[in-house]
Amino acid sequence: MNLKKALIERRSIRRFKQTEVDKKDLVYLVDMARRAPFAANGQQLRYLIVVQPRLVREVFNRTAWAAYVKPRRDPVWGVSSPMAFIAVSAPKYGASQEVNVGAAFQSMSLAAQGIGLGTCWLGAFRKEEVAKILMVPNDRELLYLMAIGYPDETPVSEDIRGDESVKYYLDDNDVLHVPKIRAEDLIEWH
Amino acid sequence: MNLKKALIERRSIRRFKQTEVDKKDLVYLVDMARRAPFAANGQQLRYLIVVQPRLVREVFNRTAWAAYVKPRRDPVWGVSSPMAFIAVSAPKYGASQEVNVGAAFQSMSLAAQGIGLGTCWLGAFRKEEVAKILMVPNDRELLYLMAIGYPDETPVSEDIRGDESVKYYLDDNDVLHVPKIRAEDLIEWH
Image 1 (cartoon, each protein chain N blue to C red):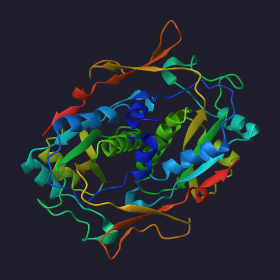
Image 2 (cartoon, one colour):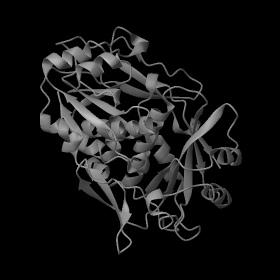
Image 3 (cartoon, each protein chain N blue to C red):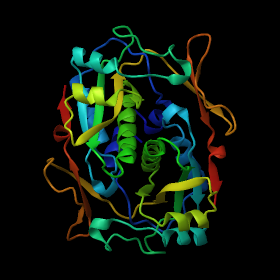
């Protein structure tokens, strides 16, 4: 896929087809994520790929979705739920891990977009319970989850001014609209 | 450019040609960055594009580069220095800003790669002095700088095992080698 197209068209996906995702495609996502830059080239992040249906469900049950339109964009287990998760762990008390995950997960989302997969980056989940389920060692912590599957919705982005509301919303046709502040209102020249 | 090619070939650049960068290309980088996901779609980041040579130099004088090979990859002003900076600011004490910047800056780096520009993400700079030079208001802070210009070096990445050193190094031909841990050593299956 064309880079610019992926950068423009990637949106968070919260409704997934119940179609299996190939394991080699999940490895590909990590293979692209690992090439992102890291502070001092540290690479302390590790990726826990969750594909066993029982474990996917255990993790899914501990996630929260799309606060502004709750509960209308909560995926339903077995109907619109993700087919896999990739959880990312880092050393506890490590420096720069948040910004490192940001870069790596964005590469992962874009790589997914390029092969037709949808992703939703989740920060709201019961971290300690999920860490226990995935047997994360005591000296590491889970930072984020990436929910993954083939998209079963097509959210649209719309440009807004810097003083307008950034709250996403569902229209009468159940399409999610994501307001994005136009570039000219984000830039200051020096 | 092809997405996968950009994901694989993007490397941090620390030697730049002294060729002017078009302002519309800098706007394009922000236009791609703004489409990254944000926690609760917040979009509190703002981009300060520094292009006036006097100010680029003032900022440049307050940056630190490539700690592992210092000072051999410190750019030299007017010889290999960046032609522009994009500084990113966020509200002080805001939540999730580090991970938000991670995603936005990664989109920016990839977008730059796609149009032949090189970037280096800088976290080591005198933040309060640069904030003063760029007149950042008191309720906001600078988080990172992106140095931008046409690349005048071609760093290479090389796959390593998870137990090898991640320190990048310069070879006898002054080429920077960046070790990246192979995917299989970063993945755990569940």
